Every structure is written in C-alpha cells, then in structure tokens.
Image 1 (spheres, rainbow, N blue to C red):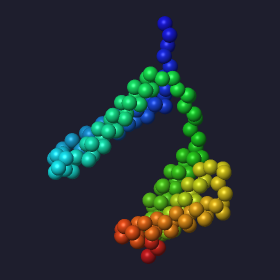
Image 2 (cartoon, helix red, strand yellow):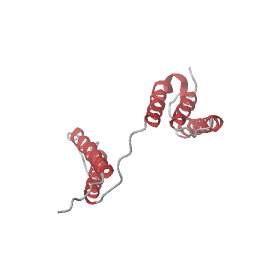
Image 3 (cartoon, helix red, strand yellow):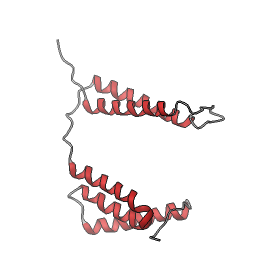
Image 4 (cartoon, rainbow, N blue to C red):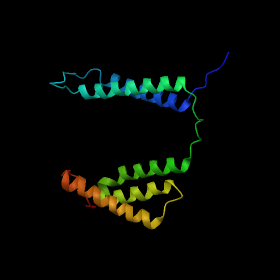
Length: 149
C-alpha cells in the first residue's frame, strides 16, 4: 500500500479560506440579500464569501491530491517588520497625517529584508507618500489629514 503525500501549504491555505468564508457567512446571516437587480447589504458579502469558500475547497482538494514542498520555517524579521509598519500606520495616520505616516510605514516595512538600501528606501517612501496624498486627498477627496494638525 502506498501513502500519498500531502501539500501542507495548499491544505493550510484551503482551511484558512474555508474558515474565513464560513465566519463571514455566519456573521452576515441576518443581513437581507436582495437580488442582483436590487442588492441588499448582505448580497456582496455573501457573493465574496461563497467565492472564498470555492477557492478554499479547490486548495483543499489540490493539497490532498498533490505532494508539495515542505513548509519553510517562519522568519521573524519580515513578519515583525511588516506588522510593526502596519501598526505604526494605524496609530499615526490620524495624528501625524498621511504624508508622515506613509513615509514611516514604508521605512519600517523596508526593515523586513537585509537587502534594503537606506537612500533608496527614503526616496521610495517619499515617492509613495506623495502618490498616496495625490490619490487619497486630491483625486478621491477623502477627508484624510495630510499633515499634523
């Protein structure tokens, strides 16, 4: 009897997607759905959740059928750098404004890899901050503070 190897990456992704879809379907169960012509508040969450459920089932089946590479160990540096960057943005966007918060976010996210060059990161951070300000404040006219008050 031969043993079939599993692709743990696909299985874990499939389980995650199924769990998120199930949770979203459960949380939106009381929202009226409506129809495609007259969408209720529960229509799009249901559609997206069902799509996620389909993707999750696909990855579960694929993971059970095909052998895959082993899961690599988690590297803490990128994980912590990205989490810190997102957290700093969430805490500083309103107080420091979009321009400064986005520069800090890009610089902190750059710490995720050792290949980051400081001057390139600063230039990239300023460029992205300018583009974010242009998009969110000028084009979309969102009430986001650009600078500290």
